[in-house]
Image (cartoon, rainbow, N blue to C red; front, side):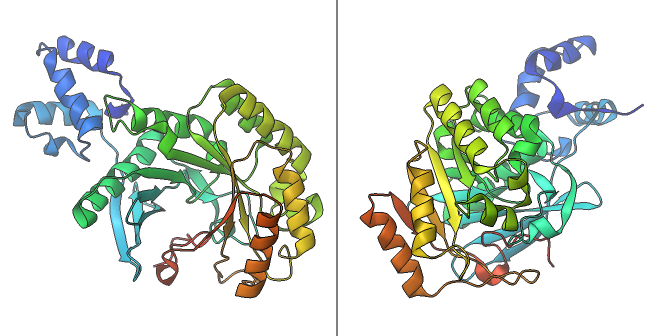
Amino acid sequence: MKQQNIRHLSLEELEEYFSSIGDKKFRAQQVYNWLWVKPVQSFDAMTNLSKDLREKLKEDFSFPSLRIDLTQHSDDGTIKTRFAAGVHHKTEGVLIPTEERKTACVSSQIGCSLGCKFCATGYLGRTRNLNFDEIFDEVALINEQSLQTFGAKLTNIVFMGMGEPLLNYKNVLKAIERITSPDALAMSPRRITVSTAGIAKQIRQLGDDQVKFKLALSLHAANDKKRSEIMPINDTNNLKSLVDALNYFYKQTKNEITFEYILFDNFNDSLKDADELIKIYRQVPADLINIIEYNPIDYAHFKKPSEDKVNAFLQHLEKNRVNARLRRSRGKDIDAACGQLANKE
């Protein structure tokens, strides 16, 4: 018989379990703390439990968890980690340190099904969704890296790694519930941003679910023809449907919305493209447009624009009273930058 994953039990269910084996009720809280507050990756690490009790837990439950498979350090301080999920599956997460912030960029899927033409992950296809406890493990392990390397806890989490978070909706929301819960990592939801390529129905669902975290839309082109060229998801989720969904999300939650816009040389970097972007920006209560440096990948033909073109694009936005900033890429030397996660050795 397949063992139940112990992290899929509530505190109340753990209490019932300990009562059923004739043990004290407070054991449930001890175990729960090991699972979520000072998260460990094995029963053996639960050091305030007797060896016999740890063996009993091993008999009765499974405890699958991510383990660190490979760590790479960038010259700029960025740390990329490849995690093993079970025997055959791998996913990646990134720790991005600055003086003010320690940000974890986490994945929600192993691979991705959306096939965006500029993104290395999109060329992998999707193997499977990550479970909520695996996503939690990413955050917990990167938080431990941050403490060990920089002496500081994570300040921010962005769901901008591998996969489309809104196509793993239940697991992503359950992971965020655990990450933000007072009886787990207790991070503020205002410090979490979920980035989507644009699934209108699920953006509306976020509004209905009254989520507390921030939302970012990976826009990358401000007309349907160009966007469909680089992001096939736009064929079924066009810009009008996304604008409507974002407005609905904001009406329901009043949460911040950000646009992400990668500049590609001679594709979406003209002043005409900037004007189209301004038009979209003014239809949505977005607080910011992140202009992102393109990071070349092996599979795609796109190039990064010149600094002059990037500056002209930004200046045009600013002249039109658009709140925009250039987001410099981090970890390019270890393929850890935006769009580069591809489970390379």
